[in-house]
Amino acid sequence: MIRFPYLVDLQTGVPCWRPIVPVVVRASSARRRTKAVVDTGSNDSILPLQLAGVLGVQLGSAGTHRVVWHGQAFPLQFGTVDLELSDGSAGFRWSALVGFSPAPIPYALFGIRGCLQFFDATFCGKDLDIELTINSSFQGHVF
Amino acid sequence: METLTPEQLERLSPFERNRMAIPIEEWRRHVGKWVAMSPDGTRIVAADADFAALDAKVIALGEDPEEVVYEGVPDPDISYIFSVSAE
Image (cartoon, rainbow over all chains, first blue to last red):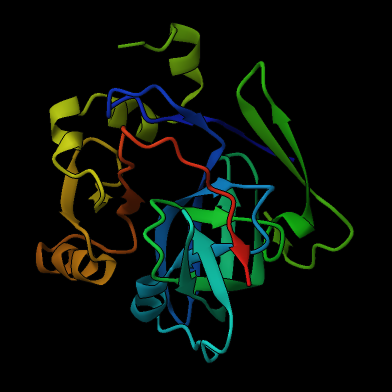
């Protein structure tokens, strides 16, 4: 199990706690570090489209897939990356098909497909923690 | 502005604790943009609304793009509903 405290956007003047986790996104031989909101209401895991270009991710065609963000539809293209989560004492790394979108979402989103499908997640509202435990569908690496 | 309790601060990573010390005014300059944070969280290395342009800035500044942390700066006047659906 790995456990992350919720993070707070205190600096903007609005103390807003969110279940945000630090993530390493890898593709080809490159990696970037960013943060993701763990979102049980999102169908897919979504990353910024331009991150795909930076990492050299091979994307599928846009097709008819769209992501709806604040009432507006944005194109969505899928590609495979390695995702890595670690709380400093343990971590998980797995390969996932994730969506890349130009939608102006200020965080990566970890939704059901690509992330939460592989974990049993507990949102600890009193302690403001999220706990992630791999389930039997997880086929990545534990370290 | 609400502040964190010592217990809450203690549970955050050193990166997050350092990040909290960056002044509000500095964050407000970057609302709606992506920022690249130094690996220890003490400073904003660069900012841009365009993720790829930000990555190029980081490299041009001689920082390691694989060690900085990229994050968006949410608009404090927006209550975010993050859930998205794919059509």
